[in-house]
Length: 324
Image (cartoon, rainbow, N blue to C red; front, side, top):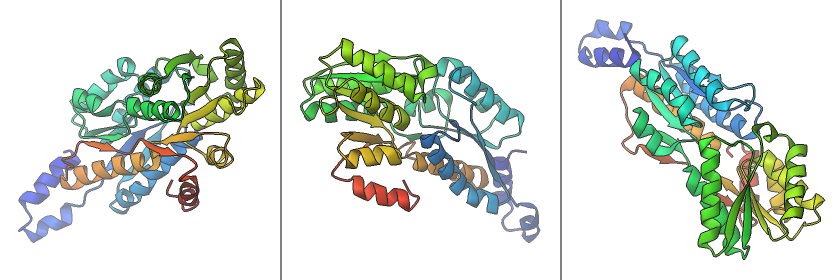
């Protein structure tokens, strides 16, 4: 019997005192995410684990499953989803990074009667298509758009999005959004496409950015897809002799990114509040499995938000408090 069926059984016998002794419920929730040592995903993981405190108090658990690297992201993530099914998950949280590789695994989740929440990537469209309860996260296209619009409104006319995870739907959406955002503000956008092995390799990213800027001197703005890549992009700009001439915005942030914004080395960061993504997704499923509680607002947005010189000090205080 599934945990939700046990909830229904409990509800049908609430007037029978003896029923209480046999209706203790617990949700074993599996969360598919990025590498735990990835700065962004470590924050998502903390949110999931903090929500898991409630699940654990009720006798349940939260299990994090992440890939060893991002070289074969779609198939590796699909395998993690299937592992969660095989390990008896009562509910599953996952990002729809690479739909063509991952959707069959998500469909197997729903076919097995396991409640599903899509988070971080894919949006409400993926949740609807796959039969998930909710989508929790930012809309990837809108996040990229916010970065492009910000740089365009600041007067930059030619931007390039640094894509170090080609083929990942959410990253492609970041870059498409960036290009459209800067175009809406009167500029033009393009994509610097790098192999997936470059993701997180600061030397490779910096060298590629340096070479690209020397070959394309008209570029005056760049957008990166994560905190580490943003710092590497800034390094590449410095190596090309373009510091102060090419301005940078990037997805997410870490301590280095926030310091760079404070020091004027980076224009902005686009925040999608990873902690909230993990926390809300796990909380929704724990309440659904145990009590049948649903959230009628199926698209629960955690971003985008802009972090720049105007609010970076407040964000830093939030980081110190463990909330950002």
